[in-house]
Length: 79
Image 1 (cartoon, one colour):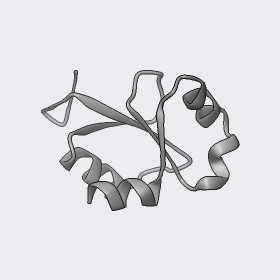
Image 2 (image 1 turned 45 degrees about the vertical axis):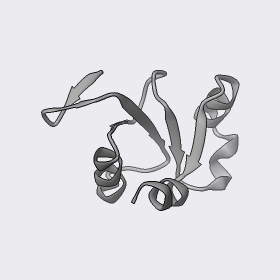
Image 3 (image 1 turned 135 degrees about the vertical axis):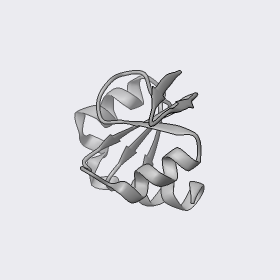
């Protein structure tokens, strides 16, 4: 569990293909997720769109059996 914004998060998302997405970050924090832009310890990889499935981060996530969601899927599920 890492401390971020004076809040303790038990889960985390790794974002790929997006920079400074405050809407996504706010939704993630409200759902109890820390937001990361690098690293290998995360619960969900959030990618910008389906075209990013061939990116290195997505391929590594697939090999590690991580959950992968597009930005819109994550927002729809957790908003």
